[in-house]
Image 1 (tube, rainbow over the protein chains, first blue to last red):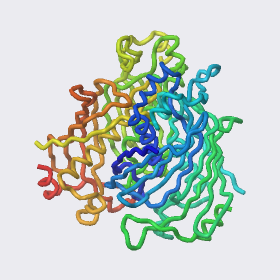
Image 2 (image 1 turned 60 degrees about the vertical axis):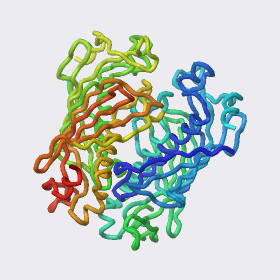
Image 3 (image 1 turned 45 degrees about the vertical axis):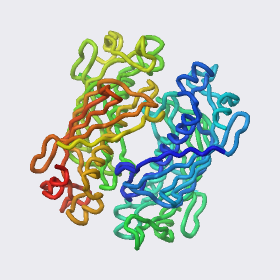
Image 4 (image 1 turned 180 degrees about the horizontal axis):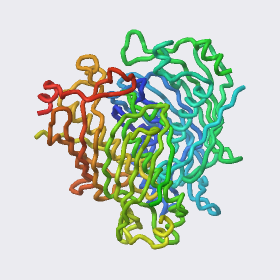
Length: 138
Length: 138
Length: 138
Length: 138
């Protein structure tokens, strides 16, 4: 199973008045790690896949995160990303956010490959995962 | 069980190139709704509780969110917040993010009441939930 | 000259370890106030104007902000927005962020009405301000 | 005059529905570049300087930015940071955000070294720039 690493420095402004990372920022970084995983696997940018496959991104369906230790500014975090499970129209993407040997938080997501809805201009819908993309990520 | 409502407009910049809310923003709003819940119950700001009770906030331990429908800019969302469970050193806070009658996402969090760690200047630790705070939220 | 008000509560997570608003958040709120100004004037959402006028938004060209007093969580801010100057392909949008009678910050922006570039799929270009939009904002 | 570089990848979620960087994100990155400048010069973290010098950070007084070209996700930006001017209680910090040889945006800030206000627990005040810090940045 392929594992891709993504590093993230924690900035002063990522922290709240309690001087620890304000937790929504972890989800910003995880989303970047998710995208970075596909980039490292050779999947093109979404504005290209929109033209070729109709795919505009991999929105979240479900996420479950556990916060183990706090982090603060000056820390350098490494996010370890894998895809432990592929389903027909969705997949599980897993993240372990580490500071050196310390686990800071871990997260399991269910994501879909999304195309624009055919009836609602603002809506989206799940499409079967293209074999070409899955092959790139193996 | 007390329910507190919090309204949030979706801004253009809250949305990503797929034209839907970039999901970390939901966690920003949920965190505001969490704090708003305590404010509505009469709990003082954390910089006051830090002086009186040593409590600097209610950091997350665990969060589980399910994304049901997408939202976009111009939408007005209402977040319905409750605390369905109190434990000794933690509690469950529940959110239902609605657009009118439509459920957009729902989220169950486990949070603690945190004080500064006594040995590590950057660390935090869970403290027993003060009876005075729990009484305010009943 | 039309003035439109926009209110913004300051959340815990909007503040940094110095316990004051982390300044990029002011620009998030100002951008919402900018959009809110046009909404109040009756200008349609950008995904509609993209179809009708080719206009995808009003990106910034230049911004100049002055920070007068700090703000913190719990504060309620009111942003007073005007357009003191219209030029051929740009306009000046002005913001005064107030907490009651206190001026917190003020900002003058130059923005354009943008369409997608005809040669670069990721680029944008300025277009003459549509008379229909200017009339709505008078 | 010392120049410090800071690199920043543009993420999908940093871009808005017009598919370009949502401008408040530039200020997030500039603030990181500002802090990074001091770190590279050997200035300790603010929670240490708070103990030793009473200094809690370098909040903004004034910022003036010019946006030259748009950037989008996948871009790698390099921020070139200098301090072209030191005054008694403030300094000018300058940023040039580049994508390769292309100037994306440039920004001149006036910042102060801040300590907590002695009368207002939530307020801050400017202090004379410590000679020790200025020497580190030369």
